[in-house]
Length: 249
Image (cartoon, rainbow, N blue to C red):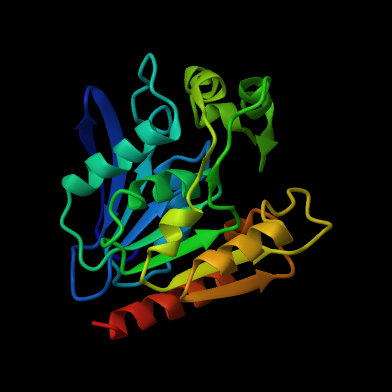
């Protein structure tokens, strides 16, 4: 991988949080990556490797990757505090926040308390909400396979059980309406994808109604897993967006 990838940890009130940093902070905007519900920071490496010369930070939330698993504390607020602990430990430059799937919820939870911090926001195929998990959520995700691996090998069963029992519903559209920075949304639209999009037309309407500076890109060969199904196209639009942010100094 181009750059200088470093694996680091930070303590968040007794929870050890793993994260990756690639490249040192520089004159380009920093990219902060918040992956999906089961995904550790390592799942962001294919994307990071294509953001040449870009200072990137990717987090493994509690219970994912090498991050530790607390006894309790698995609602969106505690996950957002993991992100906060990482960012307090790192110097960034005009950060652009990129969230995929459930990571959008945790990212927006952090942003909702730090509205002036983002220079840009990238949302990949997820509404601006945090869902209350249904009964059976933990067992479903633990046993589900993706690309030949059980998702339970990336996230601990206790973390999944905590998410199921502790998650509460929260919307972040009001927070987004107060954001002044540009926002890019990437949406999968392939109805035949094995994992369909998590965005409905109603979700898109809410985004359009809330965000002043918004661009939406559709991915016709992808469902939800855009970063795997169309990584090249994804990186093209992300790179263009980042260059726009860089030019708005």
